[in-house]
Length: 261
Picture 1 (tube, rainbow, N blue to C red):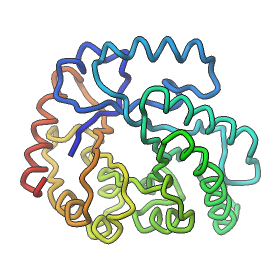
Picture 2 (picture 1 turned 90 degrees about the vertical axis):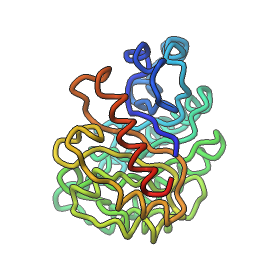
Picture 3 (picture 1 turned 180 degrees about the vertical axis):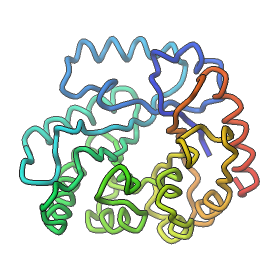
Picture 4 (picture 1 turned 45 degrees about the horizontal axis):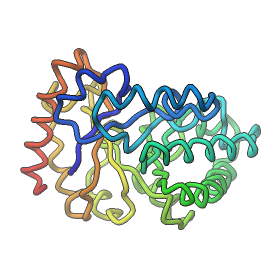
């Protein structure tokens, strides 16, 4: 299993470069910045090389004001945004973009859930061939019920991905969101063939693995049984990034080994 971290490559370059991280997961809105200038993007790419790691994924896909469900969906803006995001991702060798974006996909009060699902599936079907053109896989991230009211469980996400039915739209498993929902690990085995990316953080305060001592092994064993062995990103808060990163990676790698990785 390759271990990465959701962080800013430029700001944390001096810590990342000598670390045990295998890759970096950046932020679509601040790093790829699809509605920003190409010149500024090129500067960020150059500066990010100081981290000495590949930027293979990015999260935070859509800003909250770029709605993909509800009564105010701007399809033209969505398509232009996604096209630029995927094109820029290809330029840095980024293979995975995470579609969490609870603000953009949350269902407005009083709006039909069935219609929202139809809209979301439709936008994923439009994005899929664009992502494929640029060698990017878009992964749907189930979010805990405290953060979003749509696509909360692995089963929910699997249903959406199966409806889209495209190899460049896959599923993400975030162990933090699963634990916050009190969701058991079995769905990780059931839907193992759909996963293309994973996230991890501790349940109580979204801390890095090892800070509170959470036991992830039941979830890791289920992932392993389902056949997943690709990337896992720490998507968590750090009290002190420089001091906590290395022990966190050591802690997680030990649990991965005990789970059969």
